[in-house]
View 1 (tube, rainbow, N blue to C red):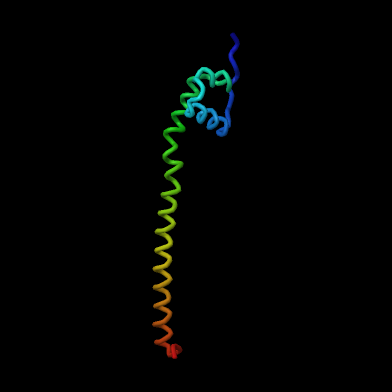
View 2 (view 1 turned 120 degrees about the vertical axis):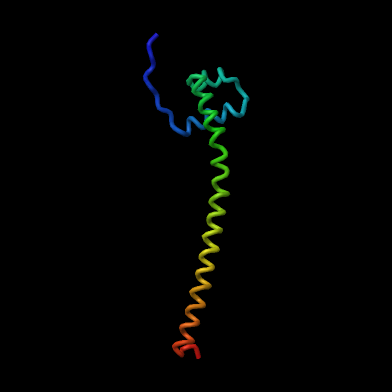
Length: 96
């Protein structure tokens, strides 16, 4: 039996296969035959999907918290600069 040359699958293809596995509508051997991929490879992609799903879904929450923190710092800086401007304007006599 001749060995098959090494194939590189796109991330989209890997995700499609892993999602089909997670759905559970077909058996692993059916999916392996349908997508022409070894069952062990499908299992590996499924495990990667499950492990990284938390990062994908949690990333937006972390980003939103970071944006909120940056926004608060910027508002504080605006307030500080406004106060400094008013003090300097009064000290120079142009605040009349």
